[in-house]
Image (cartoon, rainbow over all chains, first blue to last red; front, top):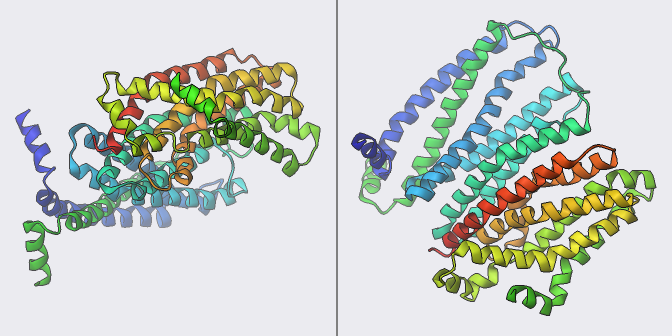
Length: 250
Length: 214
């Protein structure tokens, strides 16, 4: 128990997060880049051609990782929001601030790659399918979170955003469920993929590698923003001055 | 009660959402064309979208004056739990601003060619659904209470949260018009209302505490 709390306190301290975060960032960056190269070269050049979709299915190696990530990042932010509301750990606010725009971009990317994939397979860029629609709503949830902060006085904005995210995360399953109900009520499966054979390993292994790579890269990106935000917030603190002084010889 | 009475004193403001609702509803036939078949098909969704927009109007600045003039601090100091005070405030606002929309809804629906029975079901979904929407929206209002320009942002924050209610509210009515049994959907709308009623007042109170720095 004591160890856990110690761990908790250490990751609440800005200099520790800043310096240890640098190591983690390096690790994530290297691992993410290597895995992405491996997954993409394997997936794009060596994985077999899909017998129904031809080569167009290969966008899966970008689309599925970002779609996974879009939802995971929201969950991660909501968890950080809970930490901020319950334990009032200030670092959690910065984690949210660092993650929000990244999550929004990733969600947008998931929608765009999905649309690009939809054109050759379904014959249209967009259908009001349950999954597409709930993804679009997720994008709006991200944008709402981003828009709230600048509208509020800065001392309360962090916790307000956190509360919004926590309520949003409770709503996500309800939204998903209702959208699925709505979709099955209204349209038959006209534009669904037809029966697809289970993926052979030569397709799903590079896919899993790409997903892992994307998570690592997201970790890299979030840490980059988090450390920059820390430096900005703590620009008067001794450790921050020392680090900048050392690095840039000021 | 005092809130309801105050709202009635300012009848003009209280009538704004329902007038807005009527105008939006009238705009749809003008925009879509007067084809009765088409209008009948889209009527439930249309009435529901118009109702959601008028709820947004009713939510605008719900807690802003309370934060600005210090009423909220009195609430915080009072013996009543803040969530109860908030609940009564939201209820009063719903009665004064949204209830007229609920009553007006079936009239609009009849005008769009729905049968009497379907219009009654529509009214039932509105009566069950708009309180939930009102509570969800009040959370957004509470978060935006100290914001200078809240109204545009409110829609962005809370409309995504309204979606389940919109889906079930309009969907139930459409299913009924199509001849299906709808008690299960009604029960779901009711369940969402009960869940919202039990959880959201506390969340709204928490939001008000946060934005006042308490």
